Image (tube, rainbow, N blue to C red; front, side, top):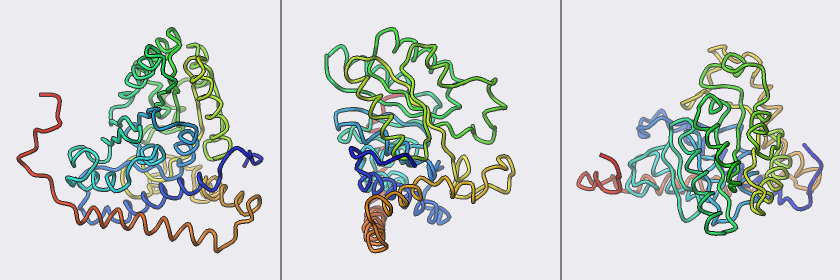
Amino acid sequence: MKSVDSTIDLPALYHSMLRIRRAEEAIANRYHEQQMRCPVHLCIGEEAIAVGVCASLTTPDVVYGNHRSHGHYMAKGGDLNAMIAEIYGKSTGCCGGRGGSMHLIDNTAGFAGAVPIVGGTVPLAVGAGWSFKLKEEERVAVVFFGDGCFEEGVLHEAMNFAALKKIPTIFVCENNGMSVYTPLTDRQPVRSISGIARAHGLGVYTGDGNDIFEVAHLAGEAIAQARSGGGPQFLEFKTYRWFGHVGHEFDDDLGYRPDETPQFREDRCPLKRAEAALSQNYGWQDGDFSAIEQRVKEEVEAAFQFTFDSPEPNPNTSGDHTYAE
């Protein structure tokens, strides 16, 4: 954990990370009930990146996610009730129950959308940023993606165009070293991901994605640079995906990432690191942690109850809010 930055509100960031962790744990615990009829990609272990980046954003700024975006949605202020309801396919979901886990949106919070197609939201974020520049608005667009996205041509095209036009878009690479079951070393030659971004002409920042202080500090610098006319910025954060690529279970038994043992992940847990800093630098004691746990528990339980009380979508509205044939 880096030294404490007095400008960073660690208690607030910890609360946001804890909400994401407990919400996803609840999803994992209930998935076997077979009421969530969509796949779920959990971001447990990667919470610090979403929270640290979004800490420097304003509501008018926009965020684009990917297939693993519960954390991005919640960190940007997306409605938890609507997210859980969407995963359950209820009419009160953020997409009216039509999209499921990989199609989240909350325009009131500035979460512009998530899609399952790798790299699919990258050009959308560049387009949004370009519109901000043309309108002379002091807004930025952020897009989250994994290291696997570097194998998609659209990312390189988008970075090139963003650099050419000095577009205020922040590219955030959550580098967990895996694409489904294949490690980075088996997919890409030995090279620096951030070095490629630098070669495209972007401002580049790299850091430990499990350290909320480092993420928040670097993201704050990058966002300020983009907002002030410095053009597109690139953030690469190393992190670890605790669960399998998709689903509600650990998949350590498959043996495709032997170094990432439970103890390995626990030692790098962003919440544990933040808890240590809260105890050491903020004087938090057991009662403080118990109180915030209780608040989060009640909020998550309320979101599930809201979902269970919500109606199923009306079949007669199945064609509403769709824009393709």
